[in-house]
Length: 151
Ligand code: SME
Image 1 (cartoon, rainbow, N blue to C red):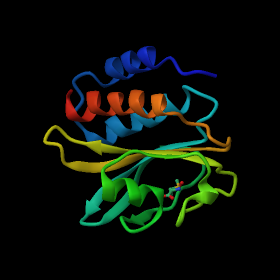
Image 2: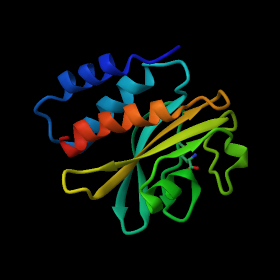
Image 3: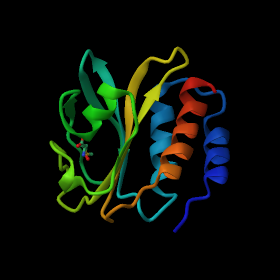
Image 4: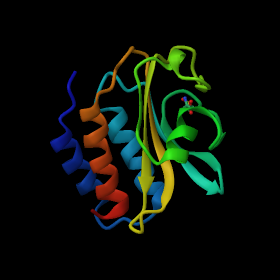
């Protein structure tokens, strides 16, 4: 089922208008994105809580691991590089952290504040192989920038 990212961005903008609390913003985005498509089986944030360390934030789906070092996993690769990680087959990604054995593909995006500082990563897991495209990454990054970077 394709995602209407124009409508999703408008909905999130309306729901978060005037809000500055990061947890509230993350919770809203996790909820709206998770329910926007049938490919999204785990949708949530990992926050930068110390140098080189990610801690789980608001999410939707089964329980996720609480802590991820920048040196580990797809989330760590995104945090280290500051680049989107588009993983068509998680079994082919060295060091993938399987919070659920059903996960087949994954998309992890950097989350930056208005100063450009990395404040976390946005992680979406799918039970479908190759579930995500460069267009998903582009459009979701635009939503994250709209909410957290004010752009
Ligand atoms: N798969 C992620 C870990 C987070 S769970 O998927 C929610 C990773 O490899 O970093």
